[in-house]
Image (cartoon, rainbow, N blue to C red; front, side, top):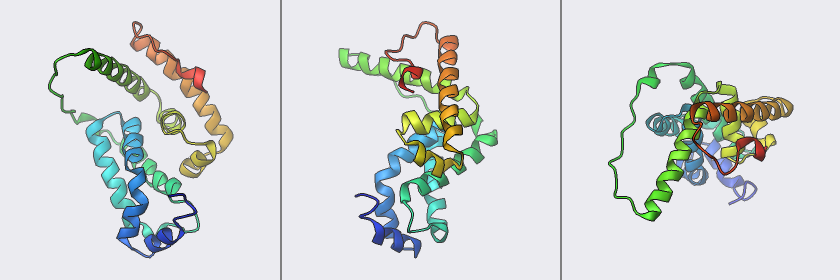
Length: 192
């Protein structure tokens, strides 16, 4: 459903209709979780934050302007919640649950290597200052346009472009420093 097709749902959500909210939020649940994961670097915390963001969005239905697109508003609520949580340090003590090892087949080995690379990038990303981590997460990982990022962050387009460029450079340096043996098929800076 496109943003123009959901005008009635957006109006109903603004008026407090939870079914309309469910229909609007359903396509974005994975994006919410991924954004939270990229901003916090912790799966358990990301799950909690994504749920908290949904609750907060429901509570703030009156603050939503139904004439505007829903996705940027929802991601703004989520990003603000993540920023608040990242500023506090208590959540960093949360320990992620470790999955039980599985027997390695050729496909499982490839998947494990991909998971390992993703974990390395996630850890390196988490070493960056929050403003660069957020810009990289939105641009590269959520594949957002700068116009969408402006709506979510409230930062100018030129500043966001600079954050993506600098953040990409910083991420590449962090990856080389933390994982000199890791060879990525494509460096982050090639995509920007």
